[in-house]
Image 1 (tube, rainbow, N blue to C red):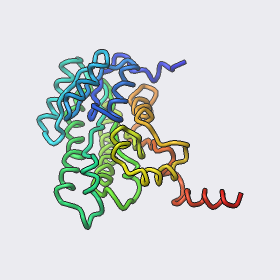
Image 2: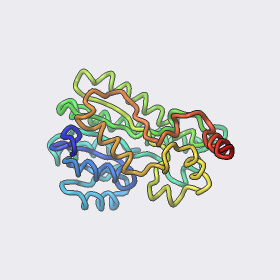
Image 3: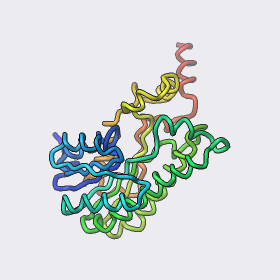
Image 4: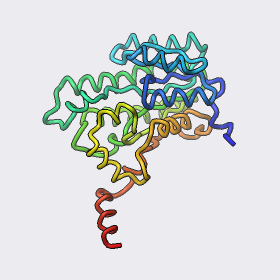
Length: 269
């Protein structure tokens, strides 16, 4: 039986990057648990399609590079719902074309670095800043999507991973400065998540490398991350703030090279 503590009845939420992947899965789950959701995305038609499939949901055009667009998003959600209880900062500057150019620092195009930080870090800050007065009024919560790459060194995605590390520190800062006002702020750090876009774009050989380091029997799905987000947004997590919840199937929990150890001991069996 589902515990009432994870219900979101009467809550009003914004999910950025809500047109697909983790964002769409989170919007669906929050709606199923009783929330009214604003699905915000730069891809407005796709956001509208998600919103149309959810009772009580609305779609909002969002360009995180635009401070005005981000402020309007919060204003529209509050105008429609009369309140704001949950801000899920999920949108990020990431796609196959971007990932190919976001490598190590020596080869990093300055434009990729700057735009990654403008969207991921500044955009998240502006969204939090616009939402905080409403979240104080409701005793609400912020959940930021970061990445397990923000917690580990890697040879790729220097801009993306470091921007997500900055959001972790922002998460802790907001938790520290606004907890006394009743606002919680946490982050979810997914590992490789099998969204439709990733299935289409990520090289199978590299995916198999990550799968080999996963402690579960499969990679995570968008719905797995949505469960973590919805939990942190719910009253069940009322005593959790300033926390980074890693949801990566155990990839970041073990010694490096576990796949090699599995193969070695399998050979000895």
